[in-house]
Length: 212
Image (cartoon, rainbow, N blue to C red; front, side):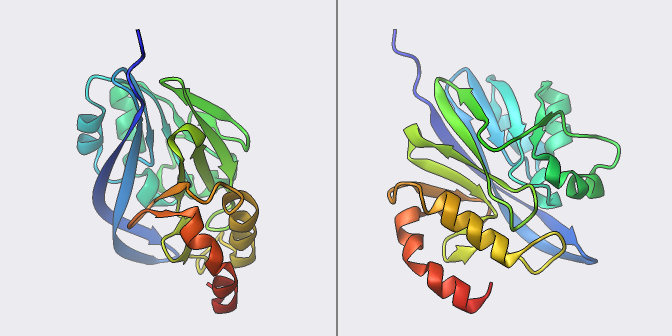
């Protein structure tokens, strides 16, 4: 029997992002990758109830955090507690994680080159620092997709004007890790609309000139 196809489900949740003494209203993309039986959540943002509903009766294999900013991790402990799934975060972003969840550590580390498998489909971890030290993207070649967190958006790189971020570093991450992917790769971002590697690649020099 052919296994059920892996699909990508998408939620938009709303809440706040706080860092360096400021707080902003934000809408976040929450991505679910899986089949009818098992699934990963990428960035458990704001609304645990909505995320649990989207998971449905499937086994949650893990909650993958693309980085440690509070708008991407605020609902992660609640989802983990209700499902028994582990929270996965790159160790270099634990300083950001602790700002939001000082009494609850992530369960497992993410490292560059790790491969997570769901429904027979691989998600490869790409360490892409810059927006934060431990930012990661997840490349799913079989789905022609990369989940970019806040590293790459439609129109340019993620913000680097706050603590623990670096514009030269994010540019290097995008150039070396993301723009090396096939141009037809769909970029599913942490906020806003999707794009493709091919649509963004020609604008690298413009981003460098703008300096953001």
